[in-house]
Image (cartoon, rainbow, N blue to C red; front, side):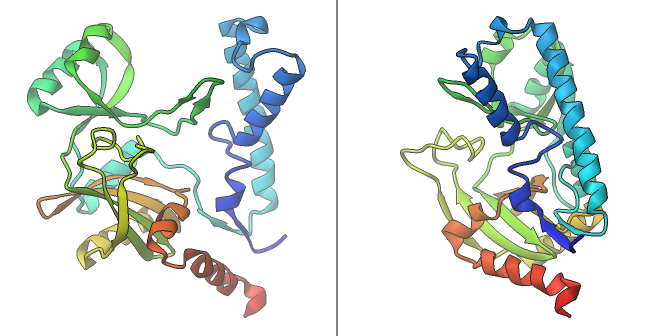
Length: 285
């Protein structure tokens, strides 16, 4: 039923490992018809009822997605996998030869205090894929955040297991779009802005970080290709930090959008990806 389906565009309409924008569209439409506020859920469900409802909706998506994939089992998927485990990826990256941040799973305040004494600076991020939550007033995102004494004052002695890493100071960040072994890199100069110094995705819309084309060295390029092959990924976006002549691996996003690299760097990725996919179609051979 066709050789391939370009997943970059499909992702926006179907994301079975989280809630897709399509789901939120129908969800929003339903509540609008009821003349209720989108997030005024207490008018419809208790917390427990709503949790159960969301679980059932996810199960429906999983069932539909499994059927869909079975109909395209012989197709070429880009990417081959839509999700990876961040912790497993970090272990694989370290084994291959990357420098990686010291990483911990923490659920007790006492352990967090010990880590702050050891590393001085810590950050926390989501350990899995979490879709942003849009309310009527704001957008709730789950980006990388620094842990300070202020947070320690308000958290409980025991909390949900959380991904904690030492904070790596940076000269700049590097985003690499990998497509079938070819790398297209971009340096992100985000260190000098307090808004973006921890995570460039905490955008300062009044003064965006400078993003420029970047030439990756051959050793690091080889490590990236080796890691992508080990993960079984034919495409993805890799995030690195550069400091004092060394790269530190952060993570890989299998469905990273190449437009983020293409717009400031003008590599011609739309044409490159189109020609590559056409060349892989057996009907063109």
